[in-house]
Picture 1 (cartoon, protein in one colour):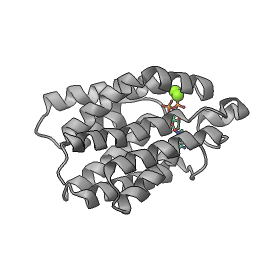
Picture 2: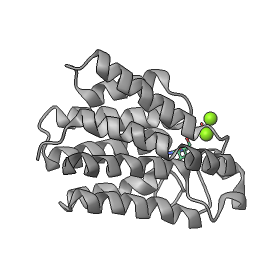
Picture 3: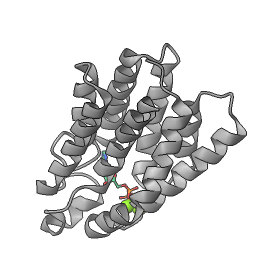
Picture 4: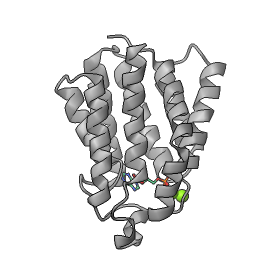
Length: 194
Ligand code: ADP
Ligand code: MG
Ligand code: MG
């Protein structure tokens, strides 16, 4: 299975534009309202960087942009995810490599951010996505698993990140970072279909 990694990242950038209002509203409810901007602007920078550096490994370029230039808690955490995906894909871009990249990226995010499943963070979308990838599920089912994990955060009270300061106010609405991560897996499934 060879998936066009440039296409994954371009599709992800488009998805961040489409979901911008939703992601912004959700972060206004539970945080400081900048998540939509962080993700959309970060991915726009990635698309520009990819156009300027087409021969470089796309997820390594994305990692560099998110680690160096994207703000918020989500910027560096997504940078770590992209970095681990880049590392795994350097060894081969089959299903096992995607599974390994997501597994290692999730581990890196948890090492740095110390969030556990159920804390109402992007970890809640990454865990079901990793499990579905490792089980060899179809990428559409991987995307659906991530989305289900993200939606389920609506029932959770945050124990990490800014949302933990607002207590019950955000309950009933999904965590923006978890939804933002689910869009990556949706983009991966979309790119496979092309
Ligand atoms: P900030 O709170 O700094 O403005 P962003 O708005 O960029 O950060 O990102 C918010 C998202 O980051 C949250 O919706 C959540 O998914 C994620 N997040 C926050 N803290 C953590 C953490 N410790 N581990 C993993 N993800 C986290
Ligand atoms: Mg924020
Ligand atoms: Mg912020």
